[in-house]
Amino acid sequence: MDQGSPPPCDGIGIVEFLQGKNYFITGATGFLGKALVEKMLRGIPDVGKLFLLIKGKDKEATMKRLKSEIINAEVFKILKAIHGSSYEAFMVSKLVPVCGDVCSANLGIDADTTNEIAKEIDVIINSAANTTWDTRYDVAININTKGPARVLEFGKKCKKLGLFLHVSSAYVNGTRQGVFFEKPFCLELRTARRDTITSKAQEISVPFLDIDAEIKLASVAVESIDRNADRTMRELGMERARIHGWCSTYEMTKAMGEMLIDSMRSSIPTVIIRPSLIESTYREPFPGWIQGYKVPILAAYGQCQLPGFVGDPDTIADTIPMDMVVNATLTALAKHGIDGKPELNVYHVATSVANPHSFKDAFNYAYDYFSSSPLLDSKGKKIAIRPMKFLVSMDSFTDFIKNEVAQRSGLTPDDNVYMSDPKRYLRMQLACFKTVHRFMRIANLYKAYMFYKGRFDVTNTKRLIEDMSIEERKRFNFDIESINWEHYIKSVHIPGVRKHLLRQPPAAKL
Image 1 (cartoon, one colour):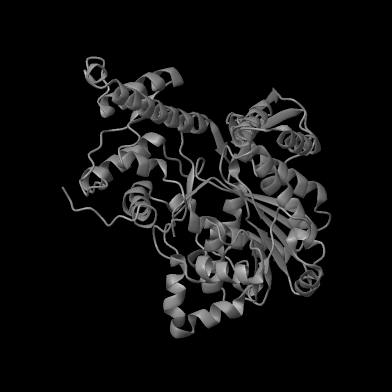
Image 2 (cartoon, helix red, strand yellow; image 1 turned 135 degrees about the vertical axis):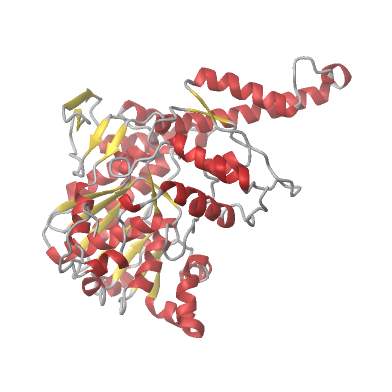
């Protein structure tokens, strides 16, 4: 055993606790929720029923989504191989779709169904969230802030409930600098206090945060808007977040969700998992699986859509493979489910302290990959890329991207397009303007993270590993110090994005 490894022990009893229990899970059709369901069905023999809250107009629509988005999903292919022809029967025997929505009172579940399933549920896992950083303020509050409160209220109706687990985000800590510890938020702080890297307390005055007032503000604002509601509500959310010390609407509304949970959990044993930026799986159920509707930054770079970016190349890129988040979640769930203490325990699943790597490292690895295995454009031609250029300010980035877009479009100062075809010239100008605007929006969203100086302490998470037996560490691995970033980015993550998001086969070597 390595000198730095925790000594072996008898273990937590993860499988022993988790098997036979019945679970109520929200967000099961999402990236994390789907991975959680997969590991529970594959890794826990004799797991009980998983009641999955799925949005749909009726039970028939909910069952249809269960089959199309979960049972038939690629992430379950290992489980499908294990069960063979009995796979679908196994899945239907374990997964119970519950028609509902975290945005509705009582989660939109009718009284009869509530009474029926409330008798059976032992554990609740809330992973439902809107993860768009600048989503509408009213939408983000309804899902990320009020949603967890509604799920917890539903949990209080479950007679056997032994634990409530909520998936949050490490970035609820906001724009403050230093090392953030695994502690619950306090509901009413007029001063943002966090420990810094030098262990000296840093206090930054921020306006008093009144969650009820923020909820009312979003509700009143949306009712008073006649036009451009989406844009106005997005801008309102980002404005409120910056006023109160967060980088984005997502972070602020997730933080308020944590605060509500802490204020209303009563004596229910509660766990909050705070992952950093979740990326593709490292090993389980197979390397490189990822789900999403957005193209990650490294993929955009490989498509030559991102020739430069605003940020400090030495900033730590705190990312974490999905399977490690899943394994840490299940381990923490078992640990505190067994303890049964009416406490709130917080875990960061993050790498910035224990195993950091920089944005410069990530883009260098990506450059190596795409140079030898380039992506293909719409015509099947290999896309050539250049080393990533980092710009230190928005002004320098704006100038850079305007020049890049103009050159790529052929709209140069000495061009004769205007003289020969003024209408075409104006169309080209408009297209360039839209492209630059898109780049600027992306840069404005990401710039706070590209200069981010916060770090996430993982003392509690490391203690979980110390409590695990050798066998448990193998079956539920989340040893973040074991991640080899060059191997993960070049051999796992980018190939996974290429296959599952871009739908491209591996390119021939140059």
